[in-house]
Image 1: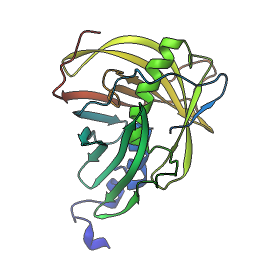
Image 2 (image 1 turned 90 degrees about the horizontal axis):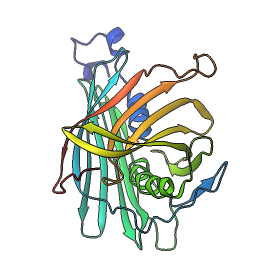
Image 3 (image 1 turned 180 degrees about the horizontal axis):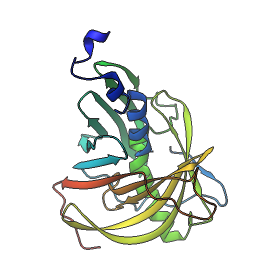
Length: 265
């Protein structure tokens, strides 16, 4: 096993590199189905008029305190009726990828398979889920969730729902197929410049249920379902009550390529 690790890499330094599990966590956070839950209010919205997914390739940089910057690539593509949403990240000795597949039926996203893999110094694991049977209902994976969240947040903002103090929730499946719950509040609509373009964004505060001290402040562009214009990681665990902590990690959008032209917000 040690022979798989380049000799110039010292194990004490390797501990500062994100492990496959940690890298998976960051992918999932961005990470972070078809079933909307309710918390303080009902999280229902008409998404029939939401933007359909559009093909694009986005390049990001994930900056983590104490770790090397992590370049990430996100793609949304279409092959016939099938949409493919993927994300991959790689540094010197660690890499990870996720790919979710889904269909769009009568304006609703239907999961159609998933696969992912994570490696550290050549050692890691792969995961996959096949497309569900016609009569089977399957929650979305994390990549499909980003697309769904963009669509629904735009409709919910217009309806005045899921705002600060009245969070909504989405269930999804993690890489191992375990049900997880993403909580979110839509805080504001903002114009934000990234990758040389101006986007109309919705700023969301998101966190995983039962882990409410770890928050992800996320800027989504509803015109580009699934695209993250920016993301901040906020850890409230050691922060005084009522104070917003400084971000300990952030994601920036460096480049966006697509056949669609960006319109003014």
